[in-house]
Image (cartoon, rainbow, N blue to C red; front, side, top):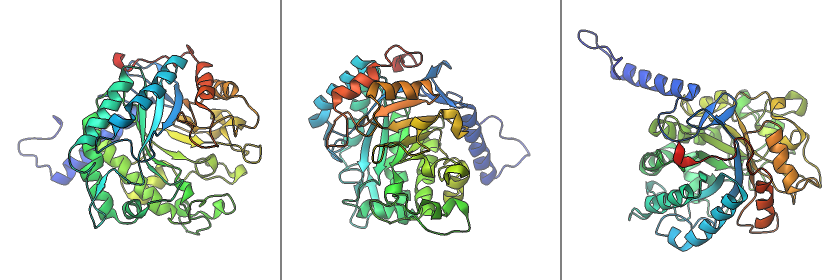
Length: 396
């Protein structure tokens, strides 16, 4: 920080911190590359050479739900992960979104009071596991986007509940798990970015009136929001997101960070649809008070309901219709709930209508509400060789 005054000029610690924060914000806004491969440039995601990138791939999303990383678990999942990455590579894809903590079943490590003491039980295997995963991805030219938490399903929820409601417990996670994780992998060429939480709307309470529009969820009444339980206010969830994003940015100022919204209803300001963007910079900072805690790009999930997409679905619009100032990735979709579209048509639609990426649900193909692995690979293959799809992390 050579710009800090010297000699008779005295600079307080507070002013230094303010200057550092301002520089980090400027770096984030300008998309300057200090490390890593991908960055944001306006409404596009680009590589370190400034070439536009389209993120084409699939959600992994797990091999063993909540039991993939840490405590030396990856060695037992690795063959399946490599199989799925090989399938994406062969289809011409470049990225995968992978769930990690989910609800904290095996990572991070919590003590009996609900405070985080580390990434796993203490043998350091979480970082070893995850770096091995990134190494495997690099060999296949795949960018990995780890998704930290999940609010779409409520199961073993006590530990995650503590992080959302108690800021001292969240700080223990930031200090003892997230920050060391980010610092350990921030320069890895296969790290694409971070997704803080999957579908906070699953546990968001609709119908809460608040004089602050960012925290008012009356517009979500009868929208299906809260399907996993009406547990948290918008302010609580946005604070939870804001402070994790800020921690990532303090450790890696150029990191791409998002949060996976279940639909556009809570992620776009459009009065004609009665939609509001709870994930805006303004709302996130109001909730968590961290200026660095804003998303680099938006990501949305979209499925038909009773055979029809909602009026605000990405498959009903071009990216420009949303008037976003950041990229938008269609981060979950499938042809099982695709309003009759084939998977090939869906990938083409996302690519042709200005979005920044398309990730199908989900490569492991567990359960009934997913396309088969082979079906998803056909969709990814439909974009093979398209401009922006072929990206080599090793060249960044």
